[in-house]
Length: 440
Image (cartoon, rainbow, N blue to C red; front, side, top):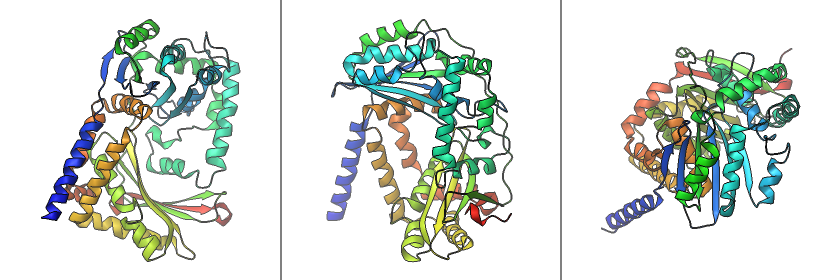
C-alpha cells in the first residue's frame, strides 16, 4: 500500500511539474517572411533577443567549406551604423552579454540585456541582418580568428579531431563529410564576391527566426520589431537538395592519428536518422541507457567492474539530415582496443536482442522527465529552444510536447530501433591513435 501511495504521489508531482513547465508564446510572420516568436516572463527584469538563421556548415559549395562558421565571426565586425570592433563594447556598456554559435545546420546569435534595453537588442540584430559591413579588411581579420580557433579547438586539442574523423568516414556524398569549421585553404581562397553572395543568399529574414523572451510588453515589442525588421527586404527562397547517402552494409575499420594524445581510443560509429525522425528520439534513450551515469550499463561493466576502460560513452550526435551515433572508449593499461570493441558490442547486442528490464525502462523514463523539467529553466534557454524547434523541426510547440514522444517509446521499440540502426554490418570502427605510433 505504501509503495502504491508513493508511486501515485511521485506521478502526481511529475505531472504538476510538467504542467508548470509549460512555455507560453506567441508567433507570427512579418511580410518579409521573418518568423517572430515572443515569450513573456516578467519575473525578472531581463530579456533575451536572438536570431537563428537556417544556415550551417553543410550549406556550402565544393571548395568553399566553413562559410557559416566564418560568418558567425564576420557578422560581429560592424554594420552601417555600428563602428567596426564596437559591437561587444556596446553590449557590455549597457549591462548585457552576447554570443553566437554555429552547427552543421544553423547559426544562432543572441543578446541578454536588462529589459530596459530591449530596443537596443532588437536594433542591433536588425542592423546585423540589414546593414552588415562586409569588406576585405573584415574578411582578412576574421580569417585569422578562425584559423586560431581551429588551432586551439581541433589541431592542438586532445581528441579534437574525432568529430571531423567521424564525418569523413560516415559520409561520402553529403556535406556532413566536411568539418563545420571548414578547411583553411577554402577560406583563404574565398573572394569578397563569394562572401557577399553567401550573405545575400542565407542571412535574409525569410531564412530566420527572431525570438524575444523575458520581461517584455507584447504590444510594445511587436511595434519595435515591425519598425526595425519590417523594412528588411525578403531574400530568395533557400532551396536545398543535398545528395543522399547509400546505406552502410559492411563494417569498415579505419585509423586516425592525433599528435596530442598519449592514450589511444576506439569508437564504434553508425550513421543514423536526422533528429526529426522518431527513431532519433529512441536512439537518445539508448545512449542514455548505455552510458549516462555511473550505474549505466557500459560504465558499470567496463569502468567499475572489469576495469578495462578509463572512460566509455554512447553519444547520439544530432543533425538535421543524418545523425551520427558513437560508442567510444579509452583503455586501461594494456587492454587492447579489440577487447573494448568486443565488450561494447556485447552491450549493444543485448539492446538489439533483448528487452531492457522494466526497472531500467522506468529509470530511463524518469531521467527524461527530469531533463524535460530542467530544460527550460532560464529565459535564454527558452529563447534558444523556441528558435530551434521552429527553424529545425518546423514545430515550435515541441517545446511543450516533445516529452510525449519519449513517454510513448516502449521497450519493444527500443529493441526494434537498435536492430534497425546499430547492427555490426552498419558500423565504422575507428582506431584513434597517438601519432607517434604511425608506421612511416
